[in-house]
Amino acid sequence: MKKNKLQELRNRIDKIDTQIVELLKERIEIAKKIGRIKENIGSESFDLIREKEVLNRILNINQGIFPEGALKVIYSEIIKACRSAQEKIKVAYLGPEATFSHIAALNYFGTSAELVPTETILDVFEEVSSERVNFGIVPIENSIEGVVATTLDAIYEYGLKVCGEIYESISHHLMNQTGRLEDIKKILSHPQAIAQCRKWLRKKLPSIPIETVPSTALAAKWAAVDKNVGAIASLVAAKLYHLQIVAKSIEDIKGNSTRFWIIGKTEVPPTGDDKTSLLFSVADRPGALFDVLKCFAQRKINLTKIESRPSKDEPWKYVFFLDCEGHIKDNRIQSCLEEMQNYCLQVIWLGSYPKGQR
Image 1: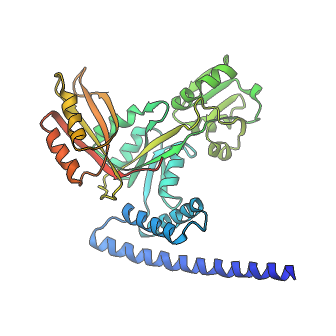
Image 2 (image 1 turned 135 degrees about the horizontal axis):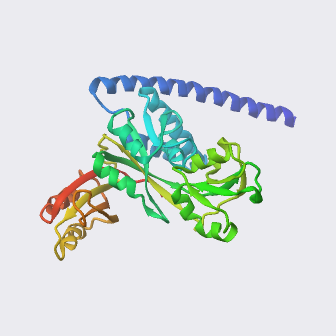
Image 3 (image 1 turned 90 degrees about the vertical axis):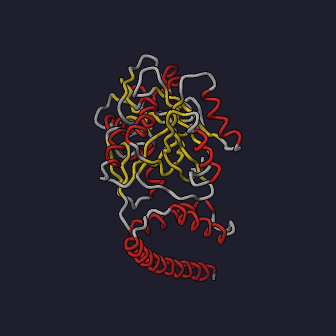
């Protein structure tokens, strides 16, 4: 009797799965039609506002019955697959496969996008600037090590727009071919990863030489062909290059995360929960920076980041990068920028985009 009931329930699930697949087939055909209409009217296929609306609507319909985290993942992939059916999106990232940049690109654009690995962060900017890809994804800051200076300098130099952001949790693992600590004669990893694990390395492997490479994934790739090398990289890298974990989560501070920028030539319309990035420079006089910051304070605009960098145009002069809440099309942001012109030598809008979830 129980076996009959079990089979009946399984048959119902099979029927539901068939209905889901049939509806997904119908959904992607409609998405293709929408893509053709967008192409005819010159509209972008990458519509973050619409995608956010769809996801929020699905979560409201669900009312918490199906696990929300899983539902977000499922529907995000459905949305991204349908988007790719309209237009194949190409995205450049700091490669090779299994870097944290690669993981961030997968999580933001989905598995249906064409992901293009590059050797350096500047190569990502080159790919986007030359329009060989639609977007690039680059690290902008780490919660422990701070800003990625190369990215800040490049966004100024290349004149591209910030179109989005995503936060990725970062956990570093020591790996090699055997899984034995005593087999490691040399450690390779990206400079940021090494810096984030320096206490652990000093305590556990004080006499082992450490060398930097352009990415954590490259370190793992090297370890896969040299039994003496230990790599600090992600679990994805360990799986991809068939390595054994020697020690898990060796980062010195837990809760580490990296913020990535999505860069491109697209201006993103307001979503109601946005962030704006700016670059500005001021005259060398007392109170100049105070006058600029007062523009934000008087309008109750929250600043989420401010960073100074040496100017490339003149020695011992500085430019400031600033993130604030709001969109360039918001009235108070517009009036703030207008007043800033009175105190700044230059003001450059780097982009307005939806806030990423930390």
